[in-house]
Amino acid sequence: MKYVSEFRDGALIGPTIDEIRRTLTRPWTIMEICGGQTHSIVKNGLDELLPGEIHLVHGPGCPVCVTPLETIDRAVAIASRPEVTFVSFGDMLRVPGSASDLLRVKSAGGDVRVVYSPLDAVRLAQARPDREVVFFGIGFETTAPANAMAIRQAARLGLGNFSMLVSHVLVPPAIEALLGSPDNLVQAFLAAGHVCTVMGWTEYEPIAARHGVPLVVTGFEPLDIVQGTLMAVRQLERGRAEVENQYTRSVRRDGNTAAQAVLREVFEVCDRKWRGIGEIPKSGFRVSERFAAFDAERRFPVSGVTTEEPAICIAGLVLRGQKKPSECPAFGSLCTPERPLGAPMVSSEGACAAYYHYGRYRVAQA
Amino acid sequence: MCLAVPGRIVDIYEVAGLRMGRVDFGGVVKEACLEYVREAEVGEYALIHVGFAIERLDEAEAQQTLRLFQEAGLLAVELGDTGAEGRP
Image (cartoon, each protein chain N blue to C red):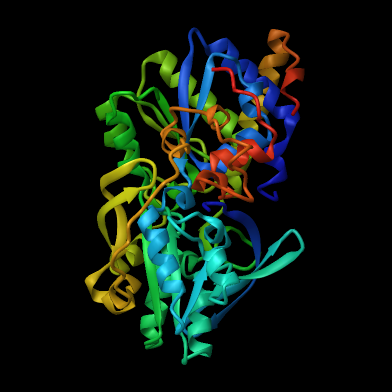
């Protein structure tokens, strides 16, 4: 068992797709939350293999895409300071701010570095006591435990020159916001398998009950997504609205409780603005009072941030599942991964980037 | 961003008070923090995300998931479906 190739076996997918076809009596709209799932769907053409009655819409589960513009602008301002070594995951460097991006700060001589793990940034702070090392801590619940551990480790090592610009987002409040919107089209969700690996799925049970929507915790390989879709369709056809777990090899009902304990210690829940969507109550993490010394927002106050989005970009509609990337007038012409107008064209998980890389230029048939 | 890749833990040690280990991703070996899977042992598979193991993988559950597909295939044979269009 390698846990990857077995779940990409095309010969096993066909019968499950046939089973979906037999189960269906009408069209259904299902949203996959996570950008990793969006890429798997588009890359493997799963949306085209599934029966036409299944309308898969892509969700806001791309942390790079939903990081608010003012946070990008704040990151650019902090990274431009001469005493700062700004450390980030690679995806963030090209994300457009109002006037600049981190890559441009780097090319203008700023000390901007890309790391694989937030602990690399802690090590950098240890090695360079003469530098202010600031890590850009973004992500969903999947990434939050790693970032929380980096802050805790910096505290344990007594590093006075390490801080984190935190812009964490949380999935369940975003699902609530989508379901509460009057133009919501989504009838069932494929919940994000790795977010639930950390958090479990108990938070989703009241959402399923309150809104009458099935939620299926689903993995990322083609077989996982097809099976998660079948489980969602079975619930829809039978009028059930429960939380089910497709991704059983990784997700337990209570999640990873050791990780959750560190999250509670280092972070606290806050209201958070999502780029393209707006403010969602209690949908983010910020650094808790106890670790305030490691909060880059407090260490480097930035004022006068005024934000401006390009008018033509429909990233907000794409992130809410209202439009497909190929329906955007700028898609593939004014907006490309090399010269992006909106964040979903930048990130390896953005829906626009997925459509661009896998050649989805024509308008998808609903 | 939420990409997490299964890897096999090849050794476990401590660095600066953190439980760390080397993880083999089909030949590429990288270091990962094992603080969140403290009960994991050498030889086990874990899901690795940004240099952190976020969970151990459960082989029995993985086999069970695959078995559901094989059963769907058997059902399809019984119903006379070929499933050929399912090949990506």
